[in-house]
Length: 143
Image (cartoon, rainbow, N blue to C red; front, side, top):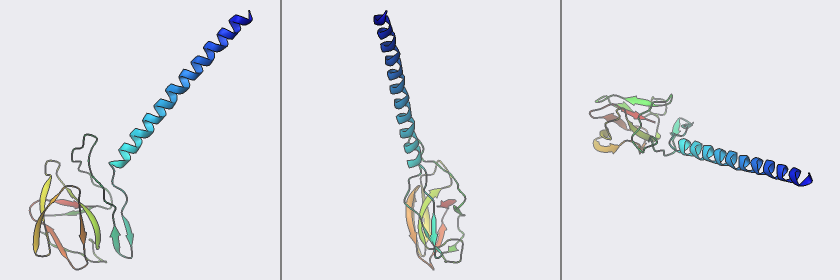
């Protein structure tokens, strides 16, 4: 009789052990997916004394493709409309991530001051006070 009881408790312990391992594996997988998802998100913009500080961030989806998104602190710039960088203005001096407003457009031209340069979706730029910025032919987002 005792022998059957030991077998029963052994089988019960084995079931609990296997269930625990499966649960831990699921938790680890879920945590890993959460970290990967967070790495594809843009971090918050910090503003101190009228100057913006933005950490560099890649804007991609799970497959690594360009992902167009718009969040509360983003600045949308229309083509051929010059905007001056000013501590009290819409665009404050600091670091920005330049994003395309269109998913099928990976590169675009931006005029900063007197110079036009080609930028890629997700590339960073630093704007100084007094500079003027303007996309040349398509709408862009500054984050």
